[in-house]
Length: 152
Image 1: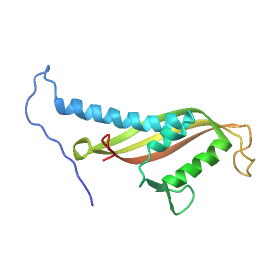
Image 2: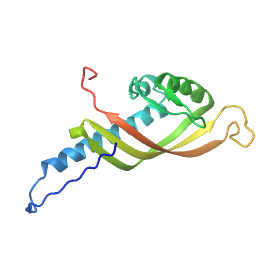
Image 3: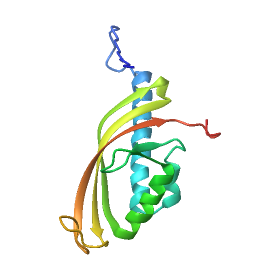
Image 4: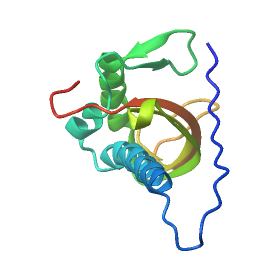
């Protein structure tokens, strides 16, 4: 299903007019980027509980280098493996595009994140070597749903 969103305003505005819809849109976008950045900051800060709280129970993503999906439980296992093999030194999220949907109740965000890390795992042929620092950039697309305090 394809959803097209259009906005058109033919009313002439005075230069000192405040557009409440624009302010709301900007606020929602800021909340989404703050949540995305929070997930990566929790990774950098080794805060497992906060990191996992950003993942919905039904969350899934493509497994790296595999033709299968991983679940929230899979990302918890990934955490264990990666945290034994690397130390995150720096994390940067770069927003690319965002679509706010359903009156601000959901969003699709596209962005990159760049991580600088030191690798402590076993040396790999044609791969990382123990003790070296690397920089990697990954591309992401997240579908996010705003939940109330009851988890709904």
